[in-house]
Image (cartoon, rainbow, N blue to C red; front, top):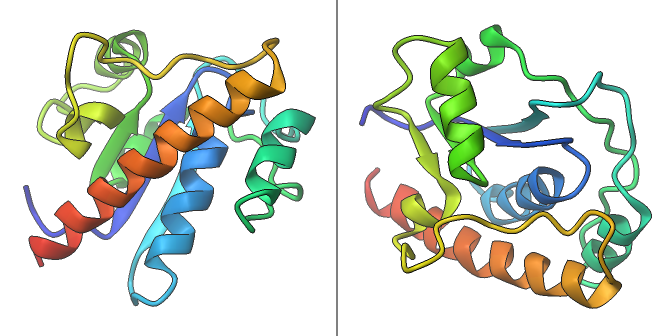
Length: 155
């Protein structure tokens, strides 16, 4: 894989998982120059705020995503990204079906973090309890730490 500068995180509605991942990635890359992190959803019209529970659990980590507005999936975003991280196989299949030539730069979030076990996907917390949101947030946080370490060690 070429040098990673632009990272795109994709989930379904761009209201929970991908904004959380974007928040963590931006926090961890804050001291590094030249990184651009964005996120998008495959089933959003764009312009929607994150869920209140996503905002709350991220505030607990000193990351404010309250001003974030969702971005709809767009071929140009995919083409511009050096690395595309998705939350599930469904997202991976969707992107591959819409944009040819993404195979070498699209990975499951867990896959790129090196944490593939029996469950490859990160569950969608939408409509679930705040405890589920916290569990998903913690999973994303831990995976993000591994992702950042992998990217930084390859520079």
